[in-house]
Image (cartoon, rainbow, N blue to C red; front, side, top):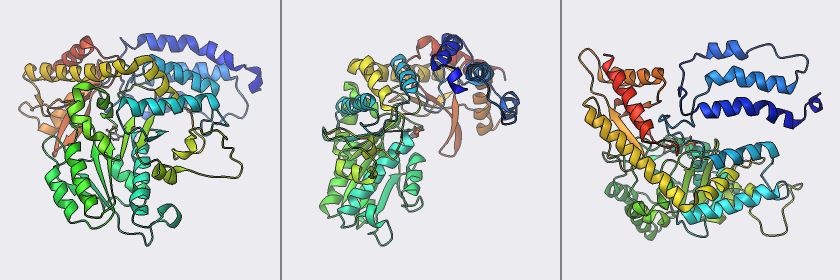
Length: 472
Ligand SMILES: Cc1ncc(COP(=O)(O)O)c(C=O)c1O
């Protein structure tokens, strides 16, 4: 039955609806308020007993689901930290899906494996990270943090005479993990996956931009007498701020000199790409003094979902934490980068192909331009909203994230008003923003992470926000 429909018939039947969707992006509503029930009513049916022609299934699906699609690739989606879709990334995604490659081993999928090998080298070079760094293309920032912290766990425990991969954690030397107040939730979650526990994480105070206070870090490290991992950030999810990497690297060096194996991890899901930009050189120069860096292809680089990147300078630790052997696996005789050595997955899709295609298309100057433009547009938001008289910009807009507080009119609590403004603009459909609780107060976040966003998008979004406020 399935052979009754050649695969190319699927492409032919979907090209119309897909083209229609893509051309609607500049004008369509970015989001619709829908209930799960509405969607179930369209999709839910008894499990079919008999086959249905695949062309009919996917053309129906395209029509049924399209009204419920969130326009993440629209230039007016500013919620969470959602990257757009670079045309080269989109093309690579179509190819990877059509080729259906299992990108675990060179023996399985040689072409895309070498594309990933080159993408890995390019990303290290682009960010001026140590040449010897190893790279895993994972599903996102969460798994990039997990992968880097797994390598960190291996490294600091091995240096303490303990092989965690072989022995597990029972009886291991006490390992300390230090992070700041306001650390992204995916770090403690990764610690949980790694058997290190969330609650044992030692919190260091952060400043008014959620940057780690280095003097506090120093003080905390002085009291720790064992292997230690310190987690910092390139681009805080609320403020966009970068930690003081120089200060953190100095504190870690001093801790090492006191005899404690140490590792500095940078969660760069939001902002590691700043490492490619001369204008951020002062901020990012000391990144390369740390030990691992996670980032996302699917955020500011605008690669398709899902794509994260885990990078460590200690390839032996990275490999020890991730590699796998099985008698039936074929490893190539020639030295080749096998994804199985650097990734937590076994079978996997060729998500690094999107990184290869996007970097090949943007080039170094294109990446610089995306980072600079999104930051400039974030500053435009901050200026226009500040000038409106209705909003307060809470953060120093040093990158592409803006944190906004809406002072309430009489009769509204601050939290309720901030949530109301976000809800009004979401319902309006012109633009999408999401909220956060920062220092105990509800606020609105703006993340400019799409290469497609331009000045008119920002101006339309600000006008929609102002309309929302003036609706009373
Ligand atoms: C700082 C930070 N780290 C990690 C993540 C998780 O990234 P992902 O959703 O790609 O797993 C995010 C997501 O926004 C983030 O902002």
